[in-house]
Amino acid sequence: MRKSAITPTQKLFRAVPNRDGMIKSYKDGNVWFHSHKWFRKIEGGDKMNRNISDEYLRYPAFFMSFSETVEGARSFDRGSESHTLLEVQNPIKLRDEIRNILLNHKFVKINWIKMEYGKTIEVDHELTPSEASERKYRQKPEKYRIECEWRLQILFRQSFRTINDTLKFRWGRDFGNLFEISRENFK
Image: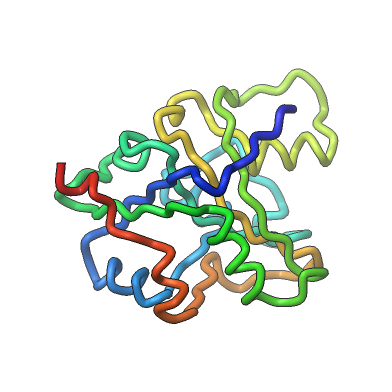
């Protein structure tokens, strides 16, 4: 499987709901990462990925999703009336800031994942643990291709049961400055 690498100069976009002070929250350095299970609930249930590890995660992972295009960030009812477009102009710096602030590096791994599209319900052989992980965390059905999605993943390298599907971090304004309101909002 081909791995894509993100670059420091690549722009990424995230559509944030225009409610409950969400934009101010991001600018104040409050960011939320969600579990894979949380995303499936929001998307109406992805039957392709149900497994026992939903409740008893071996290595819990949490994500924040971005798009490499404005169209991708605006897809699936995330239009300008309901969402504001945030822009990250240096995704490597964002990842590194989170890495520097978070827990012990031996306990947590942080990386960018480029999503691949074309996943089907059927598989033609018994998946190895590595293949199952790739399928679960890096692949989506073709209908989501417009998203051009990158996920910033926080992966815990230790096994434990999570009690929440969301990780909420409050890092302060210096961190929040990594998110800018995109000029694309005003075009």
